[in-house]
Each structure stands twice: as C-alpha cells, then as structure tokens.
Image (cartoon, rainbow over all chains, first blue to last red):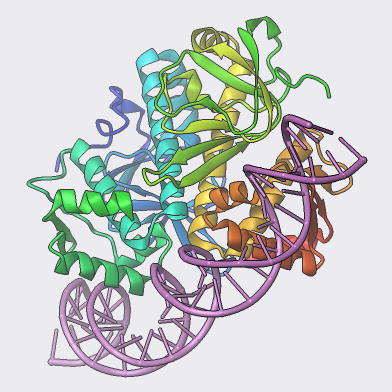
Length: 219
Length: 219
DNA sequence: CGGAAACTTGATCGAATTCAAATAAGGTGG
DNA sequence: CCACCTTATTTGAATTCGATCAAGTTTCCG
C-alpha cells in the first residue's frame, strides 16, 4: 500500500513538514479528549475513530478516520478537542506541528482552500449524522453508514468491484449509529438474508446497491 | 432592543458592508436548500432554524439561529447549502455579499479568527447533537437543548433571572431532538410537575438548574 | 488447542411512537 | 371585545421498534 500520509485528503506537497511517524495497535488511544497538544495527526494506514465518551462509559463515535484522513481541521486552530481519537485497527499515522501547518496554510492559497474544503466536509458529515440519528430507522442508519463509508473509500481508491475492507466491530457500528450491538447484528443479518450485502471477515460486498440505497433513504 | 446585526456573533466593525435588510414572517423560508446564492445571512431579530427536509416530509433541525447569529460560516465559501433556513418567528435579517465578506475576512486577522471561531462552534454544536441523539434519553436530550439555548442566549444578554423567551413550538423541539411532539409534550410536563422548569406563553423559567443539569448528563 | 472476544439468537421489557380525541391558545374579522 | 376558526398542546390507549437479559456459537489469536 502506497503512503497516503500526504496525498490523501490532505494533499500537501511538502512531506518534509511531517514531524514524526508512529504506529499504534488497535484499541489504543491516539489522542485523549481534553489533552493539550501541538500536534496535528494524519492517518496513514488503518482505521481510527473520533469518539465522545459519556460519563457512564457509553460511547458515541463522531467520525471514522480512514487512510489519508486528517483527524480534524480543528486541530489546526485549537490546542485540544472534546473528543478522543482511538485506533480501531493497528494504525500508522504521522504528526505535524500545528504552527507549521498553519503557516503553510496561510501562505499557500491552494492549501488554505484544501483545509476549508475538508472542514466543510466534516461539518457536512456531522449534519448528516444528526439527520440519521434524529429521523431515520435503524436499518436506514446502518445502510447510510455503509454507503457513506463506501463513497469515502472509493475516493481513496479502496473499493474494487463493490467490495471493500470494513475492519469495524459491530460495536463500532453501534456506537456510530446509536444502537446496541445486538440490534446491529439483527439488522445486518436481515440485510444478508435479503441479499443486500455480504459482510464477513472484515470485508463487505455490496450485493444490491439500489436496494440498499432505497432502505437508506426511506427508513 | 439594540441592533445586533453586526455586533452579535459576527462582531464586524464595518456595517457598511451590509448589502440589504429584510423582514420575513414566521414559517417562511429565508433560504431554500440547494439554491445557489451570493448572499450571507445574519439574523438581526427573531429566531430561525437550519433544517434538513427528508423526502417523506419529516424534518430534522440542525441548528437554531438566534439574534446576532450568522447562518453558517459555510456560506462564506460555498454557494449553496444542503439545508434550508426557516423563520420560526417573524425575523429581521441582513445580507452580505459572499465575495465582500470573504475579502474582509482575508484582509483582517481579527475577522478571520472570528470566523474560524464561529466555524468551530458550529462543528462543536453539531458533534454535541450527534452525542445527544445517539446516546441520550428523551428527557436528557430536551434538558440539554434547553440548557444549551440558555447558554447561547446568556452570551447575548437575553437571559434575565433564569428566565428567557423561547418562541419555539413543541414541533420545533421535537424536530431538533429527534422525537415526536406528543412525547416532547409529555416530557416537558414531567419537568413541570417535578419543579424543574416552567414553560408557557413562549417563555421559560428555569426553576431548578442543577436538577435539569443532572437529567441532561445522566439520561 | 484453548481461551477470550465477537457475533448470533431467543425471550422479555420498555421507551417512544402512533392513533385518536379533547382541551387550550392564538389570531381574525365583525 | 367577542365569536369563530385555526393551530398548539395535552391526554389516553394500543402498538412497535429497539433495548435488555441470557445463553449459545463462531471467530480470532496466542
């Protein structure tokens, strides 16, 4: 797999800005909510999630991060976040210094616009999540999530022939769409039985795209 | 009530930038999702909401806009939104031209940082909404909404003695927290009976702040 | 191969929805 | 200011979707 640290969402042409490279095993926190830091993280390989921890131990996943993703443009301007970032698989990532990235951004119109674009994509995704959680049924939420992940993975060339790696536990899906793992399991099995998709061994195969889209939009 | 068109969230010191002033009655759309426009709207008086319309006629409110609020920093860079903006009460608003506001922003460090700050506040609010809708009970969501509105209104000096105007129909609350009006009514009445708040004639009185906060955090 | 984590399945429960009707609040023209 | 009509809110009963509880089963890894 080629290095997506600079060419993914971020698309910088100054790799020398990267301050350090790291790897971290699945489940470990890459960043703990509230901690003050000068670092801006970019995922190079593996999956991670931005998540909010409720006082009682429950979680809500705010975003999934795939290879090439900047953790959040917020990191460019703020020295801490309210959410944590957790590795879902083993993750390779790199870090930039906020100040340097900020200078790069302010001095280069193209980079500036790239960050603006990423920021709005984040806002757009958050708004869509609100719509899903607020007004869509469980099957619709799950279908939506899978389709939106496919779209993002496609943009990174990570989807082939309606198949792609989806290294999420059902717990992660549940924490993203506001359901329990038990119910996620039931819904996915229903999808399977209805011939909509095949999900096994951390891989999905979309078997009936329009069927899935119908469920995503009308539930 | 003094004019908050320039001094509210936006805090520009160049009122001359405003292109035009308008008024619009309750229920009317200020902006229709998908329409292309050069205008950036700022609410001067009254309440409005950013909302997403589902194909089947249901709504999800993404944000409430109170006097002084910019509709969305997204308007500074994009020529359309996916959401609509609807007046919830009679609304007075003004419009800027995107290009002019953008120039003002790029030429003035303070204004730039103000927009960055507003943008992150929007993202933060969206993330909090995701957490609420995904993982909190109906009472917790409603309590959260009311408390967060109070905080925002306080910042604009619109709260006195734990009382403030809340010109929302229960339908608006329902569309914001992902419930039905029937259930919103039941929950609010429970709050009333438990002596947590008093809500009547478009005005709220918080009777037991810590009690409400407890419900907001543990539901 | 063995143990732990993840997933599945069934039974039961409960929060919120739906349906339906009654009451209250607003707004308008007379 | 009142009668009337519309829009909101409240309340009750029945229903449903998804949660919870409790085993099983499968998968994953060392």
